[in-house]
Length: 95
Picture 1 (cartoon, one colour):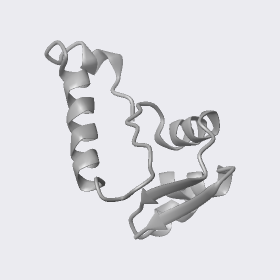
Picture 2 (cartoon, rainbow, N blue to C red):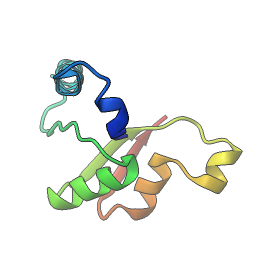
Picture 3 (cartoon, rainbow, N blue to C red):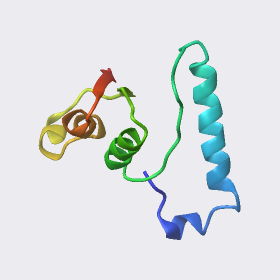
Picture 4 (cartoon, one colour):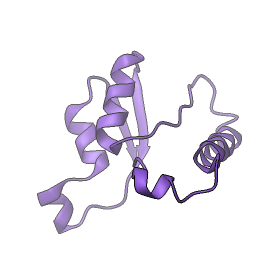
């Protein structure tokens, strides 16, 4: 999720960029043997941002983790369920 502007102003200069770089490096090291993939760290409303990025970049398959849904997810939805329902490509959900 995007960090609200009033919070960003309270963070040290460069903190957001540093966090994005750290996340990308950790993911890259964990996925180093995964083969043909493109890693991207993006910010925004989680479900909408994933769908928009995938559509703009011609993604063939979205792989994402998800928790086991509880009753509130059936009524409110989760990021994974939103992506599964609206993606224009295959979605693989890891639980």
